[in-house]
Amino acid sequence: MRFSLLLPTILIAACSSVAMDTPPPSTVFAADQPTVLITGANRGLGLEFARQYAARGWNVLSSCRNPDQAAALQMLAAEFPRVAIDRLDITSDADVQAIAGKYADQPIDVLLNNAGIYGELDEQSLGNFDFDELKRVLDVNAIGSLRMAEAFTSHVQRSQQKKIISLGGGMGTPGIGRLVRGHYFFKMSKAAHISAVVSLQADLKDSGILVTMISPGRVDTQMLEDSGWSGKSISAAESASLVISMIEGLEPKMGGRLITYNGIILPW
Ligand SMILES: NC(=O)c1ccc[n+]([C@@H]2O[C@H](COP(=O)([O-])OP(=O)(O)OC[C@H]3O[C@@H](n4cnc5c(N)ncnc54)[C@H](OP(=O)(O)O)[C@@H]3O)[C@@H](O)[C@H]2O)c1
Image (cartoon, rainbow, N blue to C red; front, side, top):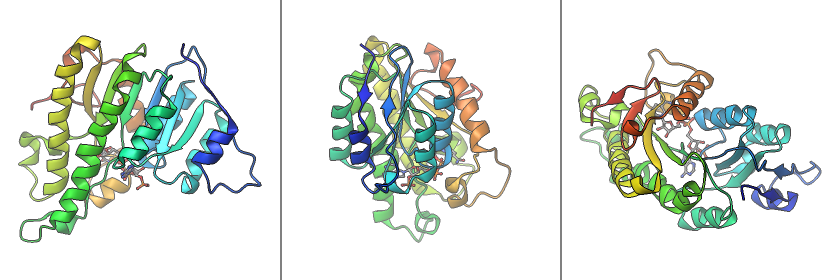
């Protein structure tokens, strides 16, 4: 049955540093609404996804590393009772297993693997490699997203829509990656995760789950700044809206593929 009543105490535990004089929001999921789980929902695209899915009436399992510092997300949860906030670092097995267990009975229609990092630019240029930084970037972008997919496969399988979506981009493909010098670690991490998406789709095909990587475009967030890009970009609100429409209109042929927010399948 698609229903959960999350008592205020759970939210208090999740957001342990929220001032106690602030009334804790209570989260009530609607049994007849779809559910999305979003990682890295405290800022950038993740926050926008949370806002837009909440406005559509979805149950929103928003997660982030530091809920007590996620003021905008807390305001969203105060406004929309179907928005839950959980502390989740995707590089932590313990965190991921705890949230998977907490929501064991909750079907999840869309797992949105949004959390990501770019890595320090100067440490990923030839001649100046810092391999500890490479491990950190891989740990989040490639391993963390795969860890989430494995932990939540059964939740997604029990849902109506059955979608596992990771955010990525053309930089991880050989075709586009070769046009831009440097940026090794970010490119490598997204390429590794595309490879995981391909394998996940093959393994999960019979269960009806669609696994896809979507490129959100160049989006005006902290990550774009971290990448050193100073050209054109679109807002997080615009990009999230396009990506959500893309997720809604996914076709079976897009499973195991990297597609752009406007539906172009990128060669891989
Ligand atoms: N912006 C673009 O142009 C662009 C282009 C292509 C793909 N993307 C992809 O879009 C996704 C969202 O990026 P964005 O542009 O919104 O970047 P952003 O503003 O930098 O946000 C990144 C989010 O990931 C979270 N995060 C980082 N490490 C985490 C971890 N270990 N566990 C959980 N959360 C973690 C961050 O949380 P903290 O606040 O705690 O650090 C933050 O919420 C990324 O996967 C990115 O690769 C973005």
